[in-house]
Length: 228
Image 1 (cartoon, rainbow, N blue to C red):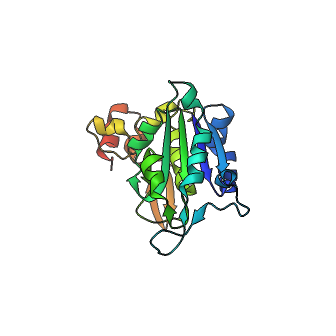
Image 2: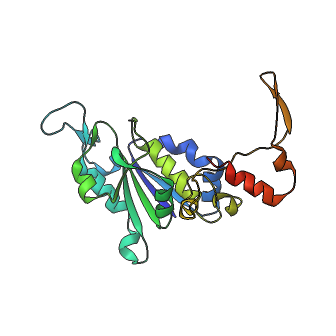
Image 3: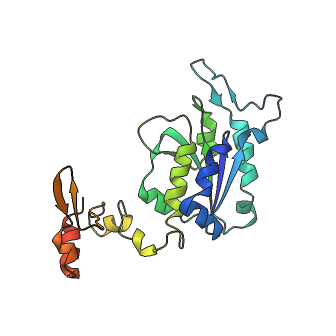
């Protein structure tokens, strides 16, 4: 899968792209991530990507023209091959709340183009005529869309074959659409590891005995009971 990030702050992604499973997935060519500086698609001396809102009001609004040019430039594959599926996403507090079901849906595409908004907002014509999805990662306001872009990249990438060491580990995890379809709760059961017994705040706490029993039927029953 290919991710193309359109942003005015491409360096924000430097460490994110070079660490942990995201870096490994790129090295294994499971994903390809490209950052694009939106200012590349403007021609004035100041590299302006925003302007005052029509009708007045506080703040500045990101202009539609450079975003339109950027999206057109980074999605050549979808024009050349009918099988190549591309999706354009704009991050905005007004958008639909991003869920695991959305991550599963987006993982079926060949390319995700991620538009990172900034300032007071983005020209409405981007939302109406360029973006396929307007997404929010929560009911709060951030400086821009760069952190939401990272969230979507992580959530989608880990669903791709080979991105996670043990593919089975993603089948029954929290918010899994597979669990919901089976009529089960959407949260995982509690996890424990070594040591078996530990003193915390003066209290001796231990791992539930059933998990040490070796009885797989009883363990599965305990896990089903303790799903959130």
